[in-house]
Image (cartoon, rainbow, N blue to C red):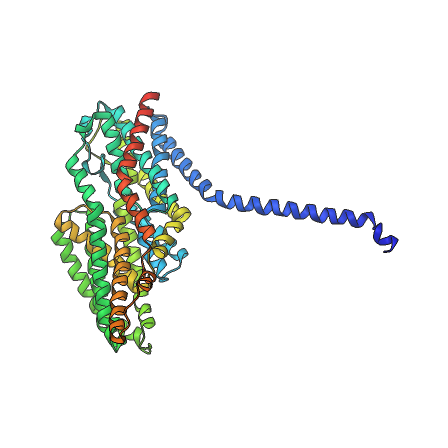
Length: 495
């Protein structure tokens, strides 16, 4: 070994030490950037909440009760963010999971149509107490009413936030109803609650997903028997796809009339159905030549059929978002509008007008929450319950519209969240049954029965998600009620 190798130039060691230090600094910077990425969405959400409070402060202009309205505006914005993060996934999840549209396109479409639905057809008058669950007159005075509404709003928002973090799609309507019940019981006793309405809401936990699942499975069965498992798939598609599009067009026309346009003018169920029949017939007639032209040159296989359902599925997702924005924005702005009215007028009204700034907080909050936090549940609903393609996702979207119409006709309360998720489970369980049936028939024809381990491997619905979602649905009302009761007691104690 030479002397030079034993005693290297000190400058060489300095450069090596500097390289090591720079690498360490680079790792620290990478770690800081990784942590910062996780804080961007919460930071933007907090900025939106603060902005809502500032808008309320400017518009109140130093009036009595200004601080209460500012706080309520911030809580209303927080609630709207959580509605966008949790509930909108039910509309867009199937379309994204089926690869009919990208996640980015879904976020953009949902943000636009949710906002349009809320601002155009969201209504200018809402009930101050969700779905008539408690009587405002049962509360001691207007101050207690304000605290009850604020507690209900914050409790519902906190529960939705927790459910989104856990990856459970839950009903925002049930969340706010639970909040109102919890605060109402503490403020005015058990007698103030309309328990008949609560019983109907509890029944909807079962009614909504079962109806959604059965209807979605029914349409998937039609597609499989009439289009997929026939010799000439393209000829069958030319006949049946326009019919299915016509049904979709009619169902969504009636759905929008019932859930969205009713805020603009009075409309009966029969009128909504007639609108649906007319629009559906027109949709069927118009799409016959379009589907024929689109299907020319297609190979006679299942993969070719998927493209025929892609565009109708995108349209249905946009329409679902519009109707959702029109209907569910009241969950965020209803209690906020009631608080603003009570603070300004000093009395408790059965119905109140919604100021434009309050509606804007709800509409923009839903869109911002969707963009910042929606992808998590969109992926879960679209990809992790069962495998979806455009045809299966189309059945889920169609089921959502038809179930609302049938439930309105029967006078049954339903949840859009439960319907959509129930539709996905319905499609998945039907696929399991159909696959088992075909395997059994094939086994019988070949004299080879299907072994139990093979049957288990063919399960097409993730049972763990089913249990998580079902548990979240059952505890939504009591969990939100308990949170609201605690918050009401705290607000009452510090004022």
